[in-house]
Length: 117
View (cartoon, rainbow, N blue to C red):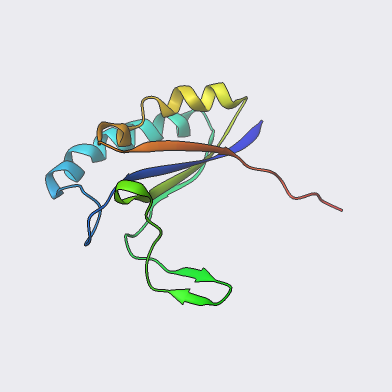
């Protein structure tokens, strides 16, 4: 099995992600069921939301800000899983609760293991 990183992206404002307290309360059972389905197959490695605030470190210094893409889209969480192939992870991703929000996405990136000498 191969390991995959899923990056969850969502729109953000100046002060935080564009979700209300009510949205988060309604979404929690959806996330628990979605992540639970992966975990029950023994394929979940790690997952967590990420804080809105962040730091960007550059060669010349650091900036007290998280990276935002076009339309103020930024990474809001991640999941690391293992699967037989990319197609399996794509099928899970199509039902991810983040996709109900405008400008949201799930990016799937295969992880490359470091060689062991």
